[in-house]
Amino acid sequence: MIEASTAQIWIIIIAMGIGTYVIRFSFLGLIGSRELPNWLLKMLRFTPVAVLPGVVAPMLIGSNAAHSADPLRLSAAMVTLIVGLLTRNVLYAIIAGLSVFFGLGALIG
Image (cartoon, rainbow, N blue to C red; front, side, top):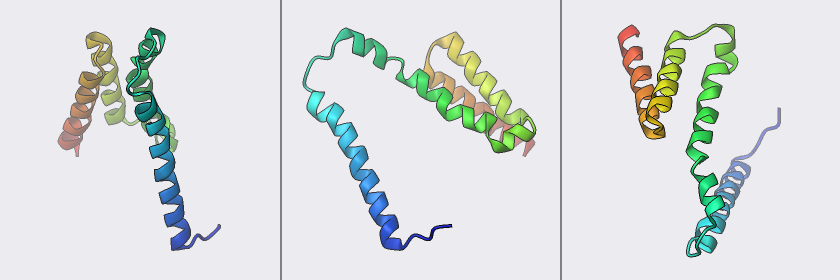
């Protein structure tokens, strides 16, 4: 295993922060005052819908979940999916899934 010094770790953190800022600035700062084409605006509406499965999937099919099905995580995922399909609202789906996850987690320990 490669050991990294404290200075190397901080250099990496700062470089990643600058890289993230540059990526966001390139979109918001340079293009923010211009009118975006309709086809791009239409595609940007799908961003939250595409991000949600990317956040949830590792919790469901990660290394720990592969050995046994966790009823708490599966029930929260199912509620999230159902609420998302019924309401077509990502925020409501996230809130419902989190409510089930933390609510059932508090009840069953």
